[in-house]
Image (spheres, rainbow, N blue to C red):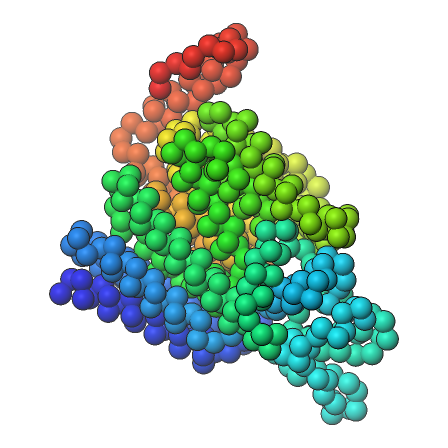
Length: 477
């Protein structure tokens, strides 16, 4: 009965997700209350599922987690993307590569690629009531052909700029689109996201079992509504970055630093932000991980650099400026105590301190908590506007069982549906308070003394007079 109830709740969550994907359509600001209610219900059912999963007999847990993951992921693919149009750009980048054109060479509205435009990505224009030329409302945007200046409609956001995505991501887009016809719309990338998501679930189950940890923790990823939404329905490439970062950590934790470094380099060449996973992997023999990562990163870029040269930077500089990282406006929490131009240096300083701490105290054979802290701290400091950035965090939430860090994912999701100026800093502050409070509770009595002793020991270890001579053995930990 306990197993049946857990599976039943997973099925209810799958049905709820599937209903929302089909019935709520594409999210538009101003009509967001249905999405708010739906998202809240999904998270509530998810929480109930985690509670019931605790009562499932151990011998059935892995099967229940995997069945639930398949049901929830399958439900997330029953309709088109509902909160983002990023996968339209993914599809376009894959389509042009299938015709031998570099995705960095031309903007989507360029005359040079006009013959490659499929109807579903570039629908026909419509005549407005005032006689002007327009586009069907919804996910379609209006732009102008770069060559003729005529009005065109497209489902690709920012159609007048080059792609922003790094080499691994572009290779993934090309691979997915290579096996489907051009008129296949959003489902191929959704299917790719589902396969990667389920692969991460299987990996979590295997690694948790090998480390003799609670396999139930895998459901923190497998059943998470944000994973269903952003990895599958909206098929964000961040799921690939998360999977590669998870793989890199699993390999380095088992002393396979060369292959772990290759996986880390591939992850960084997927979305760049996985570079924050490096500090927890550099405690021992760091040169192997660094060299392998650099080699993988550069080799993945070689074909694109040969084809388009410096254009491989794409829209990245413009994106950072657009998001407000150049003037400090996007650092929601940091901006409170370091306003204006001080925010960016303060954010860098905070992340450097966290990176050094993670590097110093992480157990090389058990880097999962270090990864959780580094990635979670980065999300709190950078405070991105988009919830799919949390996909990189969630596998490490699952590996450590630290469910309280999911509040960061919830905070980023709330910002998407509550478009008010104070939403992002307030929700992130609440997440930070919950994380600190639950972490203190986990530590038990005497946590202040243990923290003070650890800080003192690490501080003295960093002093020049206390450094080990080069080549001397590390002290026992």
